[in-house]
Image 1 (cartoon, rainbow, N blue to C red):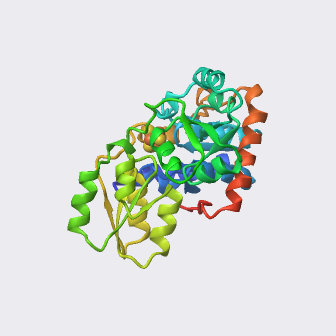
Image 2: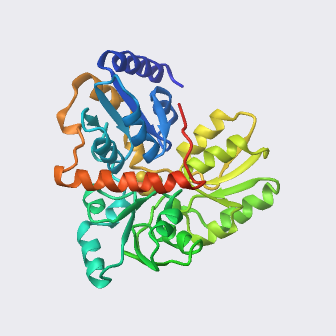
Image 3: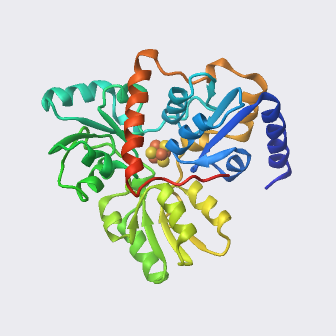
Length: 321
Ligand code: SF4
C-alpha cells in the first residue's frame, strides 16, 4: 500500500464520518476500496445492508450500476451515489425490456425469471428475480414446467443441470465476459499441479469448467467454503477482487486463481479518487435513480426472492470488510 493510497483512504474515512456516508463495496472491488468500505459482499447482500443500517445520510455504492439501482429501490430515503457512472455490467447489457416482451409473446403464459444482473427496466418485465446462489430454488419455487430465463446462458445451463424444469434462454449469447475467460485446460493444469486443492467455479463459468470443478457456487458460497473447510488450498474461478479478499482474510490458506486475467474492467472503474470526489462534491449526476413506475414491482420481486432463498441452503453469508 503506497503513502498516497493511505492518505486517500484517511481522507475518505474522515469525510465519510462527517457526511454520515455508508460505503458499500462489491467483492470484485480493489482491496484498497474494500478496506475503506463499511461492508463488502455480493450485490444482494449489499442492497440488503443498505436497508438494515441506519443513521447515514448517503450511500456510496462501489459496484456496477444495476447493483446501485437495487440499493436505490430498497433505500428510497437516501441518495445512492456511484463513484463512476460508466461502471455498467456488460452482462446486464444483453437484456433489454423489449427482448423480454418478445419472448413473452413467443411463449405466452410462461413465467420470466431474470438474474439480478439486469437493468431496472428489464426487471420490471420479470415475474421473478434470482441470484446465482438462488437460481435453482427460484425456478423450482414457481411450480411450473418451463420458465423463460436470462440473461446469462452459462447460469441457465447450470440451472438446467439441477432441475427438470425446462429453461428457455432469452438470449443464447448472454454471458459475463470475465467468467467466460475460464476454460477447462486451465483447471486441468492446476489440478495436476495441486492435487489436494479444492476447486470451485462460479455458475457464470462455461459448463465444462463447472462440470470439472469440485464445487460450483456463488461468491457467497466461495467465501463460506474457504472459511469453513479444512482444506488448505483452493483453486477458484471468479473475479480477482474476491480472490485477493479471501487470501487476505485467510493467510493460513492458499488461494489459487484459475486465471489471473479474470478482472472486471467495469468494476475496476471505481477508484479511491472518485470516491473522495463524491464525498467532497456530492455530484448530483452520480446519484442513481430508478424510474418511479418500476420501483413497486422490483421491490415486490426482490421480496419474493428473499422468501424463496430463505427456505433453502443457498443463503449467501455476510462478508464484513
Ligand atoms: S464480473 Fe461479469 S457479471 Fe460481474 S459486473 Fe463484471 S461483467 Fe458483469
